[in-house]
Image (cartoon, rainbow, N blue to C red; front, top):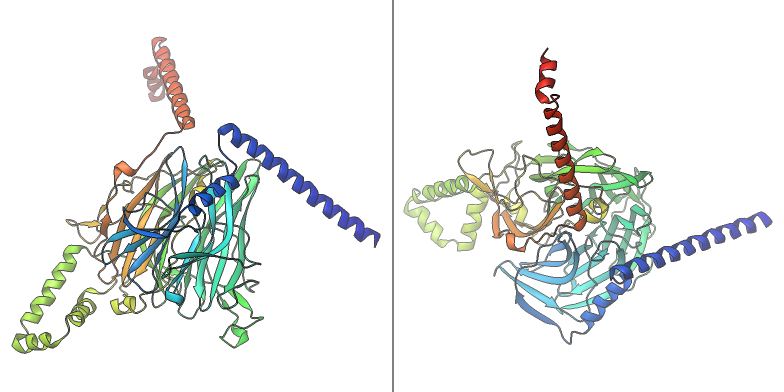
Length: 576
């Protein structure tokens, strides 16, 4: 008994020491922030909350499109032809801006509305959002991250919010036993539950990646941590999740890092794939208390994407998803990573784990096929025209799309029909909120430059591999953009393009009709005037040092040539 008591005392002593250390660290951080003229992180968040409370009433007004941002959520309205954007972040090279604004994009009217309410979740990025149909539509938000303007402080949330769309009201859900504070996680709705997997937490002194699974029940408003059997995915953030038609969840990719020595970490870009669902041994597909969950490793096939971070994924009907962009990393040494931003386009069969490289057909090819279809109808004679006249105009348009213009052409010859894509217009979307600059790039380890094969951050065009004369529109290479699918149309907004030390946060907006697959439509073009970038004093001093070193080398070369020991003598010696 005495030994157990001694052990308990030691544990308590260790806890006290850890708490004491944390207090010292926090005190030191607050002192440093005071010297910089910046409040501590919790005070910064409190200031935002108080400012929002000063609003006397709820307002919704037509507004300019959202400012440049990344790591926001873009979610299709569960019923209406609208997209809901919440939060995000912007870094201009000197200062970080965090948002908690809620925009509603009307697809029909091509206009943005800004909703302002007295009660709203604090500013954040890398959170997750899920839309539900009940009670006139709901938008559920969990977790995320807040960064101070200098990026020297980070705060991770573990709060759960619901936005009642019809009432235009936010409600904070007080449910205990949920996931710890985190960002870069993924959350989706399966039947009557929210499922959260993975994520990341950083408190400056250390960091942690998660591979835990939590379930929130919509009927009981309770959290439950589940312990799935089977091969466990490694802890990660910035992965992607998609819901299969049978309620199972697919997890793909992600990023994590581990310390290898003092002040040095090793990052891993994951490209494995898992299915999370109920253990088939239970027999009953209906989820019950005490149910068992199970992980299953998926063997991938087809034309797989190269390993990457920060890619965008949207779920389509009939067990399909599409993936766009990201960044391909190359490790130069222990202190630097170089990468190339991408704008390639893939489709994934969720049930089979089969990848396919999507090929755009081009607008000219699409219009040519449409003209041929029209000509065939005209040559059908009066009977054909009479039958056409009896049809509803909407049905006629649907026929044209389905019969002639509605196949997703893939390089392996398979296809997906437009009717399949439009069958479930309110399919939930797993938008991208890769924990980019904070998990991978904010520590000064990760640097990305545009490769020769990439395109500029403002470029909109790329020559199609199927046509040599036609320029096909598609978004420029990027990472951490948000993507959403609604009624056969895929939408892509913002993100980040990096070139050496410069991070260009984008505000362009694109759509593509997956029934036609001709090219991307530019809804909002990139505006150079909005792409602010301020060189930091640190970067400027590094550039000055490089220039001084280059100047010194030039002087040494000149001195060497004057002494008769220059390049000509070296070449002669080598050739002899």
